Length: 305
Image (tube, rainbow, N blue to C red; front, side, top):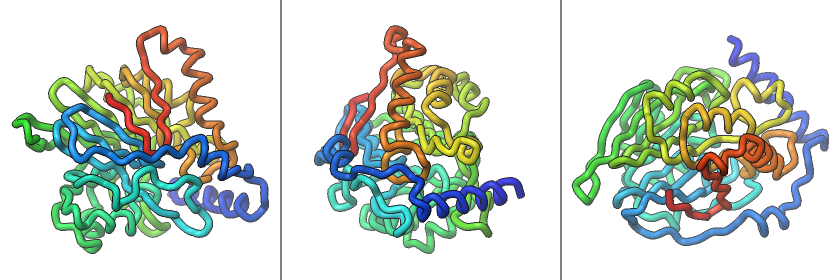
């Protein structure tokens, strides 16, 4: 299987880099000072608000509903510890109503992080094929989905929030034996005339243009921008800043919020390189002059969208 062969090569490279000393050295004190800005979130809000917790984990608050994406709060392993603490700890979270899962990689659906949410009794919206695992972890409100499935939740104001599970160009599987045994994808959150797109993990593909045509008014796109090096190993599964901007333009979204960078050291790039590359191509395209907005959030920082 092509995906399994690619994964084996990627893992070999990551382990080699980990123990060879070739990866960039992270100044954790500087990174913490520059990028860690935790703040206690409000319990509920009517204003659409996004708070970056780290990696692909966001707290999305809309019309009294609290949504969490791809929960990860802890180290993945000894080999992959967090570089920056979670911007919000599980204990600091407001009551979570809905959890969105894009796919089952450990940096997006980690067991201990998920189980920390059991007391919230959330509804889990997950890709097809993950229900049994989530049930074993203790969840009972689980809804599995294929691409282009859509479902709605009522809000306290009497309106509704729509969730659509959409394509991505990636792969699924938490080990070598269950690769692509479950679905992977992205999510659109719609409320009233407001739409927030959560891209999950993806390489560049035509699905961004197709989603932009399907949803004509996307206010905010939460887009992955790393790992970016070594490019020949990661380009089949991950966007870099240049590709993420092209995907953002394909979506015809208004605000770009980067994610999936700075939390773990998966690539060989310097710590800030994904953000530097992103800003370089943002300015090259003159997107500020086109009315687009780039919101680079610190860990724990909130943005009204």
